[in-house]
Length: 197
Image (tube, rainbow, N blue to C red; front, side, top):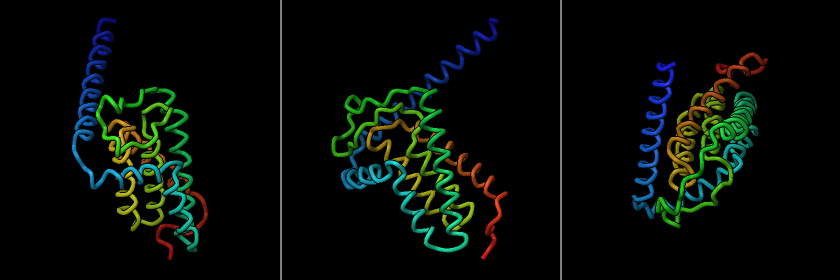
């Protein structure tokens, strides 16, 4: 029993240390002047609401026959799984409060509406990474551009002050896992494979 108590205490200290680092990075991002990026990242963060960017990309892919159309379906399926996992499961279990954007001195020029949901994990990031993983399982050439876009969406959530970096990292891991799972399931469904013309 004493050993278990020691392990629990050690675990709490580790979590507290990670939380301190997380908050320090959040504060450092807020304190770094980036006037040329503020408006662009604010607009990107807003555009990613409700996975609008992923849906638009999927619509474009769906206009093409074969692998691109299948990639769009896998990508959207991945978004659905990641979104449900992040918003219905992750946020309800973690219940991490949103950052104190005013106390953290995030410049007002960066502000987007502060969501009412819990902070952990980042649903925007989870959905963006899920779409990237799902689509690139069918279209390998899309991995780099969609991965870069997903990472930028994730960073924009920290830049605008609505998430801690740890929320974004967790969202990226969750989204990548969701995309991999959906892509694995899709491999069992008849249709054009990754190597198909």
